[in-house]
Length: 384
Ligand SMILES: Cc1cc2nc3c(=O)[nH]c(=O)nc-3n(C[C@H](O)[C@H](O)[C@H](O)COP(=O)(O)OP(=O)(O)OC[C@H]3O[C@@H](n4cnc5c(N)ncnc54)[C@H](O)[C@@H]3O)c2cc1C
Ligand code: SF4
Ligand code: SF4
Image (cartoon, rainbow, N blue to C red; front, side):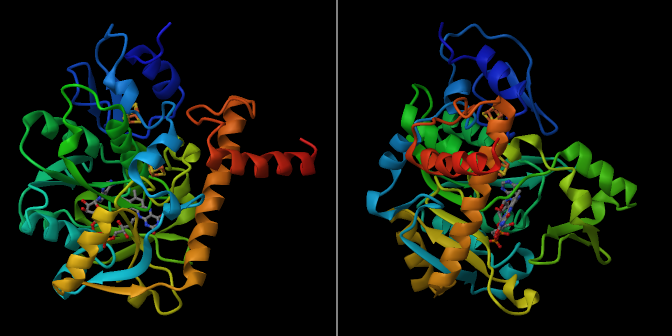
């Protein structure tokens, strides 16, 4: 029996708590929608092969084929994927840095890609009045800046991408979390009819440790008497074990242990912290110094030639300041990424009950095999 359809998406992804809310299965047909931050099947579809199943980052994927398709072999690392260059970066414009999450590298790169005509539209994440997020299709700098900053609930941004490719409105750039970048990469691999993936010209990946369940998170904020509409920003400052919230009036902090209870279940099974399937990936900087200075910088991984050209152009135009990061920083990043992979793999094995059943992962994948070796050794040592 064919397993690549909507029924199996429900059985193996939605019902198993593996859905990341990325939006890749939405906007392809009238049967699946996002309600708040949940993926809902409104109606049964009897197609044998569904794009929904094929694109989903939580259905099985030939990751080795994806790496071969998108990256140069010599750039590949097991911990963080392809690396052509690793830097600390920030937008030169101080006004942009003020409204962005960290160094504004993401927004600066998208602004440049739009201005240069490398892309005709950018898809970013926009929050609505109900404190939920959606993909927003953007064509100008003002709207890009309006949507800068991180929101830690899920944004089904890839649904907006599905909508835009059917409208055939030219080249697209998108900001994507790791699971979203994987869904977009799968689209390139499977190349379905009526889904013009060739319009995708740029994927700016975000590092991602987790996203929060909108329901649990809003409940927590309301318990703390925090007016949702007053929130202007949020961050997780290095080494402080808090979630920092910026409101119209002041800054508040919530102990991270309380926030941890709001993390979406699907994130426990996520192996990717750096958006390995993007052209460039951007996260918060980590280097010694005062956090208020450090937070205005990003970590930047250049993964593809296209990513390299855009970053070089941004530097040449005086839009982005880029500093070579030390080998020690790269090592720390790799260690943190490897830790996430191992934890996720451990959670996957715990959920499936067997080292041989890895849910959406292929145990023959070399990266998974490497991590499995570690997992097997750990179990042996503990006598499990
Ligand atoms: C859910 C989440 C978890 C993250 N976890 C980590 C982490 O563990 N470690 C780390 O180093 N960095 C993490 N980041 C990335 C970090 O918060 C910044 O986005 C990154 O450093 C880029 O900063 P910037 O100033 O260049 O971004 P900006 O220039 O401010 O641009 C940010 C872009 O992200 C888009 N965006 C905002 N929220 C979302 C969302 N939920 N989904 C998709 N797109 C969104 C915005 O629309 C905007 O285009 C996370 C981001 C998100 C959204
Ligand atoms: S992970 Fe993404 S593609 Fe898969 S079911 Fe959830 S929203 Fe759909
Ligand atoms: S932790 Fe992984 S699954 Fe969760 S939102 Fe981030 S990339 Fe997606």
